[in-house]
Length: 321
Image 1 (tube, rainbow, N blue to C red):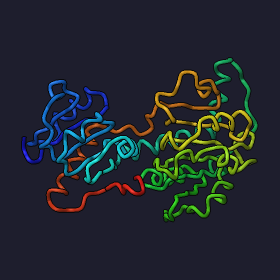
Image 2: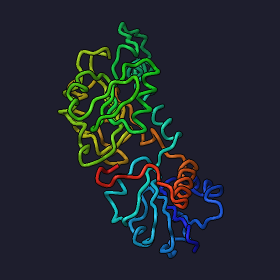
Image 3: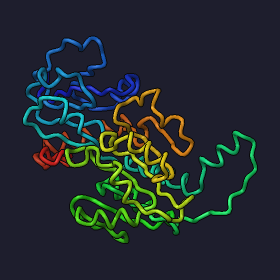
Image 4: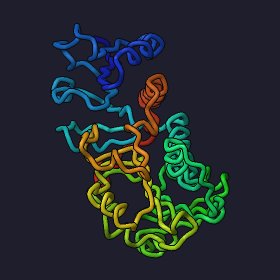
């Protein structure tokens, strides 16, 4: 096994991993754990690991890793579920992933702005019922919670679409042309928000953050249908309390929701969210990682490491992202 050997354990579609590996990591030995022939391979000589929800034994077997590279933007599953070596962990940051997330956020914001669920129901029922209230994007304030790479890009693209956009992060961030708030300004931020976008990492501070108390702070009487705010979440399912989302939708605190992530995935077939006409559900696909892009990113980080340059997007284990 060569000094620069790579172990790949990505719980993606196996065929996509195999196809991407044909063009990836030229000149290096790569052990793809999706290949049954590698099930019992000695991994002690591997220097690098590219992972997404890997086998629990991987880090015991690959005990001499120099760098761990996540196959996704989030790393909470790695930090919470494994005994990890004292090794740098690198998040996946890539234009394709960022663009996909912003597409989802803009799409869902427009869906609720233009009352698409209402008209979809009318179509199913063969009803022709024009509505009097048609706010435009400029009438609606979208509040983005989480201003990392994904959140900052989504905020900028929402602004291009004409929405009034504000942002929140626990520590102060500056984005040109967008008013931002930090932890001390949460109440003010919520009180101005008609569409709340969750793009937060999952940490001890954000677990269960999107709950009844937070929803109660959102603006009521805004420009959206019936003056009720909307909640979008494509960050982490663990940051939301789904019973509170259902209750807020039922009692009118929320007028709608779009959810791509859930506390338990897949979402249980008996969840009341499935049957709510003002809710859009997508199966954690808002920003799916492109396997080839993951490998290109990993190749860049490995090259930087071997040239003695700093790795990019290194996880702060104390902060959890």
